[in-house]
Amino acid sequence: MSVFMIIRIAFKALSRNKMRTALTMLGMIIGVAAVITMVALGTGAQTSIDAAVQSAGTNTVIVSAGNFTQGGVRQGQGNASTLIPDDAVAISQLPGILYTAAGSSTRAQMVAGNQNWNTQAQGTDVDLPLINAWPVDDGSFFTTQDVTQAAKVVVLGTVVRDQLFGTDSEPVGQVIQIQHQPFTVVGVMASKGQSSMGQDRDDTVFIPYTTVMKKMRGVTFINNVTVAAAEASQVTAVADRIATLLRVRHKIAPGDPDDFMVRTIEEMASVRKEATQTMTALLASIAGVSLLVGGIGIMNIMLVSVTERTREIGLRMAIGARGRDVLLQFLVEAIVLSLFGGGIGIALGFGVAQGVTLWQGWPTAVSPNAVFLAFGFAAATGVFFGFYPAQKAAALDPIDALRFE
Image 1 (tube, one colour):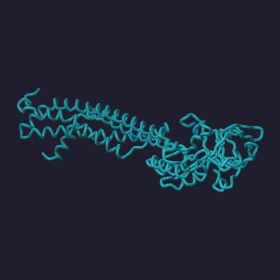
Image 2: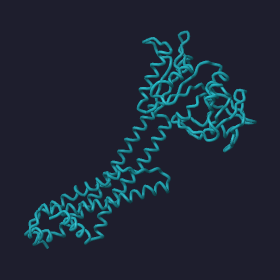
Image 3: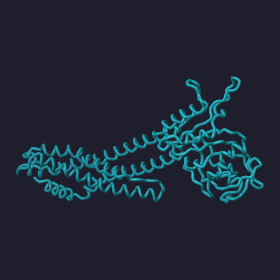
Image 4: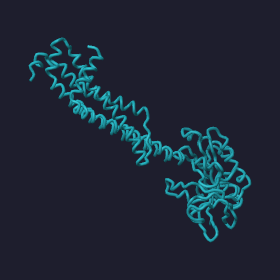
């Protein structure tokens, strides 16, 4: 019997009981649609997680001043004065580094008119918004020329703007007093919210680090250098290069402790890995349960079909059909049920995913791999759960089958 004839008979047999065929396919439709929808939601959520983690800086390396010891008393990390602007310049020239920003910070009282606010004055360089993926909402960030000239310019966080000028105000071009010195507001950062440590990142202002060093603190050293590696996979290698460079620049003898610290954002990388593993396990569980339910439905209906068509099977075998022909016939019917149900389920999954995006605003993304995977699972389910009923039909004795009532 030709394959074309087998497929034709399969369609004819399934069309005899349209309602039963539709209800049988419904389990597969719901299962595949659930898989596609969950994969779309999972992929979209993972994309959002990746963007958030990247914004937090998985490719970021923090170089900080180290311990300072005087008279046998160790002052603790961050008190050494050996980290200087030239170190930041040297670090920026290392391979695998995309951006660098020297830092020198202090707390200060901000005054605008009759309003005042005490906050963090973060001295930094022009690359910091690029490192943290933090855009300017109003105005602009200060320039390289401002850093070179130690200009008295400031970029406000949204909390500081609201406290000094009011919500949704436009303070660009206004002058505020910081430590009794006039600073011109050149920009306002977009709202960033709290960090993973609970710190409000909008409650700060940004000033050229040279201005903080020379005109606010009166020092010649910096507190830290924030570095962005070109690739997240290069972070460890970049951190090692920085440590080697600084030991040479600071003339630290072999065996002596560092007078600086080099740290990476390991916690965020760990969160990313755990989130990916959890999402993968969740999707695998849903896919398994959904397709299992659909497959059991197909197996149940095929067993019923074998019982109903026992005389038909006996007649076919009596006129020359072989057992493998009967087996292939019922197996093809099961596969047709699975593939049609899978195809409709994929279309339904696409529709539900788009609906979730439109109605709830949740990000979704259906990858071609997910479609092929769902369709492959549908075919495999048809083969697996259709094999037993098909084998049972092929094993029938023609004489007994013809006598079946």
